[in-house]
Length: 228
Image (cartoon, rainbow, N blue to C red):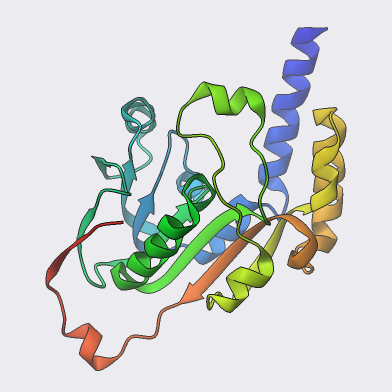
């Protein structure tokens, strides 16, 4: 029975990737060029983005970096705590990704990281996060000291922060309370066709902020040390 459930979960995972409204499909549409993936983890969805020409993955977890390296997801890697500093040129990446990252930071650190991402990005910042505060599953919290959720970021807040394009991901947010995972995932996928257009009530949100490049900013290439 357990083998059957494992196979069923794996099949549902693959189906989720094929869902036209999945995070994988939307990232493939939005992400291109030279990309900085902050908090990249071991299995970043950037691997499904076909328009990426060069990417750098940054993560504090050495084990996650090694696993990502084995999969060849990024061109280059940096093992670093993003709360302690980032050393990049202004406007040095077309796109800066924060996928399942800012909810793991205290709120004040999250705000600072978003400000820094705005300075590093040339074209856009993309944030993927639960819609509002969501307690992490107990098993996941114990699997890594970095997994605990410390803050929440809602649709309304991200709009106020200048993210002009927000996609609703994984369907209606209240379906997340369903304990039986297979049923939950099925209903989330089913409702994703509707809630991608109603992100205010979706389980997760993928937020895109386009960067306005002034002539002044284009001329500035100094290396800056960011400390959160």
